[in-house]
Image (cartoon, rainbow, N blue to C red; front, side, top):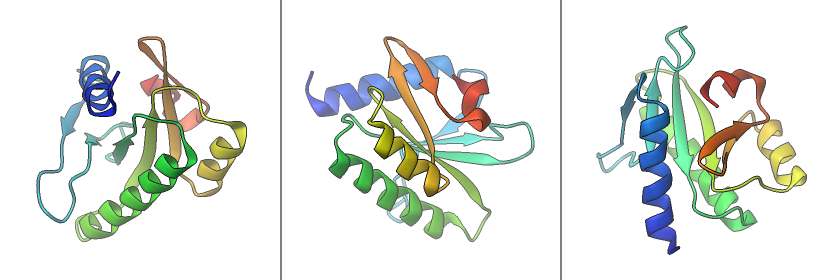
Length: 124
């Protein structure tokens, strides 16, 4: 599946799985994020999610940069929790790196979501 098509498929599936949440997409020039989940944890905290169509290291590094950039540009309004969504489970080293950065990780297992982050388990 082409990357753009896979990205769209993942984003659409996310909207189906998280239909009970308010999801937005960044359309402004400052922050064109993939998904923002309003009040994702019931404690008025929002979650910025960057969707990548590959588990390659370069894509993970790009996702981290994008999340920090979006968070910085939107920070004037509030603090955000950050998460990367991948089409499959990355290497343990990549998962450890994201954990070290305090960035959540989710991936698709078939058509369902999975995570190794306790604080995101209610979304999987």
